[in-house]
Length: 560
Image 1 (cartoon, rainbow, N blue to C red):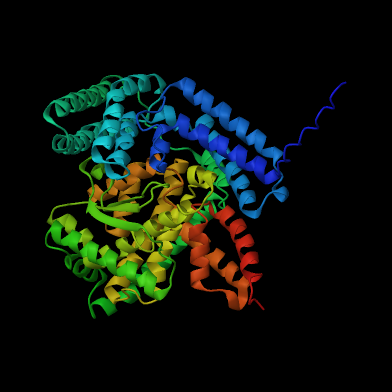
Image 2 (image 1 turned 90 degrees about the vertical axis):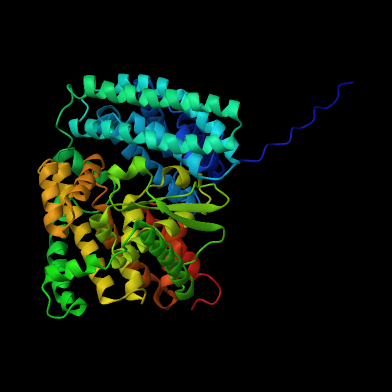
């Protein structure tokens, strides 16, 4: 007698959200596997011993993958996904289009011979972030150091039509990278027994020699064949801004920068008598600069005090929520990074680090350079880099659970717009609102307005780097070395310098829109917490994020 076949229990039907989550996990897994330095920077340590593949074949495979992800995203109608996932869908498409534009049309990957920098920056998060005992981290660092000679050799094959200025910058970088290697070596000498240290030392020396050999190759082979043209040119720069969804064409953004520059200079003139009655503008600028630390150690102490003060102010004023398990260390800018960092910078913690510990770099200098680190300027920079600026923004972004936002969200107009917005917002609410500090804050806005004009004209090919240095010095009073370092960075990052002031403008418009939607329920803290917890989304997508967050807030109990 035949037994009746048992009916198989049907597998649970996957929802659109389930299918999307699986797709997002696959993208994230592929990206972190193919880009080990990205994985390390995120706090994923499965690939800490690897370096990326610098070959042209790897670039072609990247293009194929990104095209495939963009095509597959069409299978997910936004209306079928939860609101946060619908924003992630738009983020993926936004990122894919920009990535393809870079890989296929801009092709920085073959025009910028910065492979030694890539190798050096792959070591830095392993060195700084205390995710494991130092001996463990040094083992991972050694594995990457061992791969640097082969990595640099393979990178040569992708370089074609290198930009002359970028090649010179790459050569300079090769001269600074040994400073990082020396810091790592010194730590290893203390951490390892003699025999183990000797092995590590040999690896460091081979990596150092390979960097020097790469610099020699750049001088001998790449530099003579390099080309002076670095700019995207008008049409491609226009396309870049369109893909970034900034909402305005290049010329409108440039005109905004020009008008802001004019208005801000008038504001500065009106404020000057409040800083020093009866004095000329140039004398006020001189007096503010001369109220500066006498030594770099005094400078670091002042910055640490300002960071602590601004952090407490954010909490006490309820400007925004400061999460637990975060900290910000103020340290000198590492020597290998100083040639492109004239004032200071911020190094964010890894996304998945349990303790969110960031680093605020302050660049040392001689007595004249310390004037740029005057006390009024230091507070403005500390707000920008620390609380409630970059550090708070990144540690709050790292609390968002989306894998795609962790890997892909890099909206510079929000990241820099937020930090620049904070400079003025804290003073409007009473933090360090002295005439001298307000004076410096407006000076920094003039700097950001100047950046807009330079960015558009430099990236469009209408301005040379030398002309950009002259404009930057004339409009801001910046010293020559600092202005040259600034402009070098501008040439390599079209569309980034304009993101500060223009991003702030977009953020203020979003704040006004949010207030109109929320009515009496609106508060600074709601708006700030909403954008901070959304991750580093492009501003065009931040509005979509706020739409569902506002609906959620308005439907909460107690709403009228």
